[in-house]
Amino acid sequence: MPKIIVEVMPKADLLDPAGKAVANALQRKGHAEISNVRIGKRIELHYASTPTDAEVEAAKQIAADFLSNGVIEDVISVTVEN
Amino acid sequence: MPKIIVEVMPKADLLDPAGKAVANALQRKGHAEISNVRIGKRIELHYASTPTDAEVEAAKQIAADFLSNGVIEDVISVTVEN
Image (cartoon, rainbow over all chains, first blue to last red; front, top):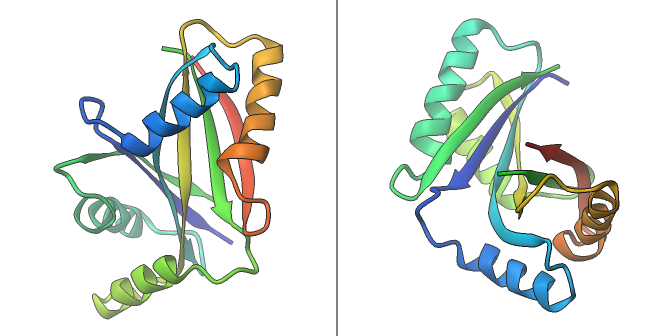
């Protein structure tokens, strides 16, 4: 099934308490090589047929307006996957 | 900074209420082309230097044991990004 994958991450200069908690837990478990963890979202939009250019543009708009909060998050990619 | 990206999605045969709510909202807004939405996680593990093969294997184990719940989620990819 054709999909558009939208990836959203917390902004780099923003604290990510859940990610920090995971990083601390991994360090306690002996994974000193992992310096930090950030947790974001991976959103799949499913399409019946390969999205047209206009539908890809619409998906970018949806990602910016609707799937992410621009105050605290960045849309890092919008990718078509067939 | 070198990273390992872990992508986790709800299992295909599982309801994803948040995804379903987004899909319904998009359809109400006129995006009939989007048949379904699934919401998963994108987790970045940060490393000081490019992860060794052993560290990549450790990250795969962490992804399966610690970053996902095997009952309801699948780890769909573990990728090194430099």
